[in-house]
Length: 123
Image (cartoon, rainbow, N blue to C red; front, side):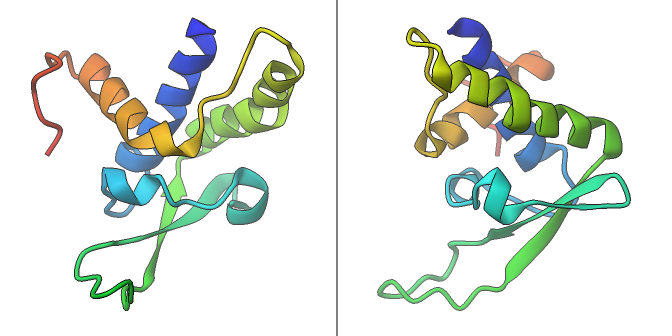
């Protein structure tokens, strides 16, 4: 289970911090599923995030922002979503973390990669 959680953290951190385009932790929680929201273009995964800044009474006028992931990291994300996560879901003792935990998972990856303490903000 620890390995699945670490892989999930790596995936979410990659999508938020290592893809092209701006992103925030709250936005990564609302990304579409791999099957619905990702497309492969020239060996790079493309997906969209939408900012929550300026939302007024539930109305979000912000446009979706296109993000691209490098070819090597795209392969990692594809293997996770097409092979690792489906196998983990079939194993009775394993669960794949929900997208609600993506913000915290991305923060953990960022802190681990850059050697920051748990009290350091990623902003």
